[in-house]
Length: 91
Image 1: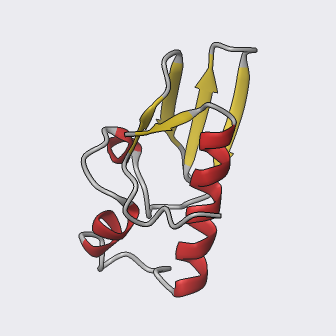
Image 2: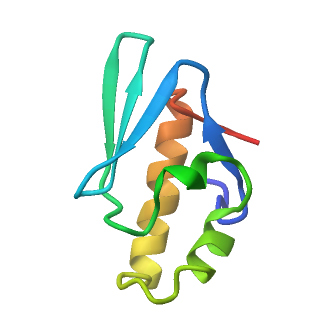
């Protein structure tokens, strides 16, 4: 897996994201399919506007719990998998 910590993401065409208590819910019109990202409050829908990479985003969220190295690595893997499924695009 490549390092995605500085990659910026946007939603793929036909994809919508909604904030839920567990994290984010993605709905794609291709299928339709639902995808869950159990990120808690670490990410919100505005992360997918393609303005910041994960490391930059998390640096701005320092007050939030759960920023240990393991959770960041898991988040990178989850973003990579959403990209492979065509839910989000690297920009």
